Length: 205
Length: 237
Image (cartoon, rainbow over all chains, first blue to last red; front, side, top):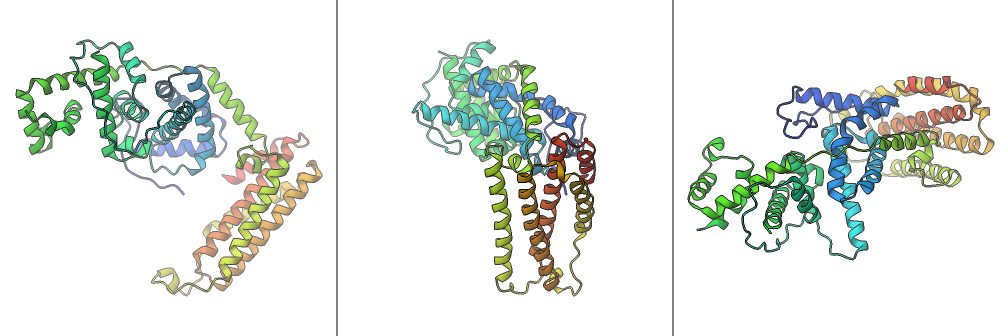
C-alpha cells in the first residue's frame, strides 16, 4: 500500500537536519505510520501531527501574510485540509515537506486574493522575470537587528519572500523548496538571490 | 572588474560552497580569485552573509492554544456528518449531497459500461496477458470479509435511521452492487483485464465505505451504542 522512498528527510529543525540522530528511513517510516494512524481515526495521532509541525508553520505563515490573526485562520484551514488529504499521502516526500507545500499554497492563494482585491500586479513564482534594478547600496550595518530584518522581509515580493523564508529562515535546500513551491531549483535560487539583494538595499537605506 | 560574471555564484559562496569542496570547480575557483581582489564583491558577500546569519536566528512565533481547540472542534463536527457530506467538504445540504453521491455512483456504472462496450485492446507483450491463469485479485477476499461483517451490523441497526436516509443508502448500495456484479462478469470474460480488476476493487472499497458510514450514522442517532462503529473501525484495519 505504501511506497517507501529513500530521499533525504525533513526532521523539523532548521540547521539541524544533518545533525539529526534519526536516519532517513526511520523518519519516513515514522511519517507513514503517523499518517496511517490518522487515517484509521486514531484521535491522538492527528494532534501529534499538529504538535510536531504547528509551531514552525505558524511562524512561516505569520511572516508570509503579515498578520497573526489571519495566520491563525489560515493555519486552521491548512490542518483541516491536511486531515482531508491524508488519504492521498503516500510518502513520496516527508510529511513535513508535504505540510509545508499545503501551507505555502494556502499562503500564496491568500496573498494573490488580497493582491487582486487591491488591484495590484501579481507576480508569478515560476516567472524568472527581469529583476527590478537594485540601486547600488551602501554597506549594510555591521549588526543587522532582527527587528529591522523582520520589517524588511515584509517588503519583499511574495515569490522572493517565500523562497527566502524557506531557505534562509527555515533552512530548506533549493531542491526541497522546488518541491514545496512547485518551481524549478533554478527559480528557487534566483528568488533567494533577488530577496537577499533587495533586503541588502532596504537595510542599507 | 567583471563582477557580473559571477552573479550566480555569489549566493552559493554565501551558503558556504567552496571550490575545494567540489573538486576545485573551475568557475568557483575563478570567483574566489576575483573575490580576493574585488572590494565591491567582498562587501556584497559580507552583507548577504550577515543577512543570512540573522535570518537563521529569527524567533519562532507560538500558535495560540485555542488554535488546536478550534481544529479539534471542526474535526469532531466533520466526523458527525454523513459520509457524502464529508467527501464533498460539507458544502452541500444532505439532500443535495445525497443526490450528487447517487449521481456519481451512476456515472461510475455508466463509465464501466462504456469501457466494456469498447473493442478489446490490442494484445500486449505483457506477462499477465500471456498467462493462461486467471489473474488473482488478492484484496477481494479482504473486502468480502469486511463487507460481510459490516452488512450484518448495518442490517441490525438500519432501523435507527430515518426513512429518507435509509432510502438513499439502499439506492446507493444497489448501484454499487450492480457495479460489483458487472465487474465480476467482465473478469470472467477477461480474467487478465487490469481495468476490470481495478473496477472491482474500487466498487468493493466504495461498498465498505458506504456500509461503514451506514453503521456510523446509526450510531450517531444515539439509538445504538458505540460498539458498531468500533467494530466497523476494527474491520477496516
